[in-house]
Picture 1: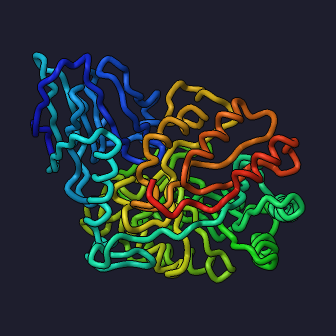
Picture 2: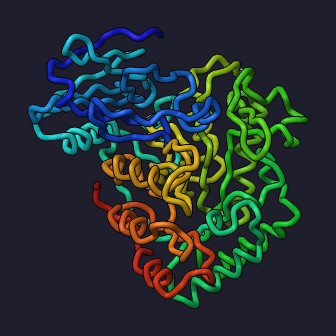
Amino acid sequence: MPFSDVGEVRCHPHEARVFEHGWQSWSPSGRYRWTDAPPRPATETIQVLAYRPETPVPDGVFQGEGLLAIEPGDGSVELWSAPDPLTVPSIRVREDKGRLVVSADGPVRHHRSEHGLGRALRDWADSMAGSTTGSTTGSTTGSTTGSTAGPRAFPAVPPMWCTWYGYWGKVTDADVIENLELSHKHGLGADMFLIDDGYEAEIGDWLEIRPEFGSLARAVDAVTGAGHRAGIWTAPFLVGHRSRIFREHPDWLVGGAYAGHMWDQDLAVLDVTHPEAAEHLVHVFRTLAAMGISHFKLDFVYAGALAGRRHEDMDPIAAYRLGLELIRRGAGPGATLHGCGAPMLPSIGLVDIMRVSPDIAPTLYPKSGDISQPSQLGARLTGAAREFLHARWWVNDPDCIMARPEVEAREEWAAHIEGTGGLRGSSDPIAALDAWGLATTRRLMVPTATEPS
């Protein structure tokens, strides 16, 4: 759908501020002066991986995905937004002869507030939380609560420990067990232990284990046997070109969909509208749940909302939501679904926890200069801009605590985590923590806040 003008604000542009909300977890979000250069993708691949692939932003405009707000400078806020989580237009603003002209490529709602940006964003988030029943079909799915039942409650989520930022893709079952024991020894309070990327043989082959990892069952049994919850990472809508699924089931893939290049391979997309692919997806999560896993980190799930040729003629956002419903069916109603790299508005009502920022990194600045990419700066800026979503749409995940000595600006990162109400999770090898790192991690490892931010 082409862009058409939907409103305007008369103001002095140099006095105005614009709030852009990004498409998915890693997409930059924040408040900018009109004269600022807003964050944009460093490469075409990053456009796919971390921004809205089908709507690149032209020069000279600001663009929000489902939400854009303007502060003219007189204390008011003009806010344009998606009508519901199933219809998420791109919304742009440009300057034209002293006016800021707003356009969109789909239907929008407009709201004016006199109570400042923070209040306007919180009120908007509350209104969106009640606009979906948590299903592509209008029925409530899994642990989600429909709008007819009133606002969803978000009980406190205990802290976790995660393998990723300490062991990356070379994690082993022994690493999990060692850190389980060290968490007990040092009183870190981790309740859930998340086995992140690196256990699987290939992207898409989630039930086939990389030989160097060891035994997934042994790691899970150690965690649950110690009285803790076990978690696992998948990228459920990605199919790597090296995977068995890619070789054996080309009919299970979304035609023409390119999900980017990672893990030294191109990435295809699982077509959840294909009956056999849907059955496979449910089977994967049912099998993992039967092992004793109850927390599922669903990463790179932007792929599920990419355009392409599907077995059924279904809108990409509806297909994405169907995919999450299938995962819930396999994982079970009591499982925790934890989105990451996920389209924000289309996930409302279907996930329990959501990453609201790009990945953290041991470094302060991203290598490419693009703050959608791993860095402390990007995670801080976008995480702070989305704090208002916590306990309104889901439990926020600001990303993990990293407190070992080689982490740049670790004090500032710890302060950022302490200021959020969201999920607390350590991801250092516990043996690598010095006295400050241990004390800081222990202090930060508390349950999530139950009241909205």
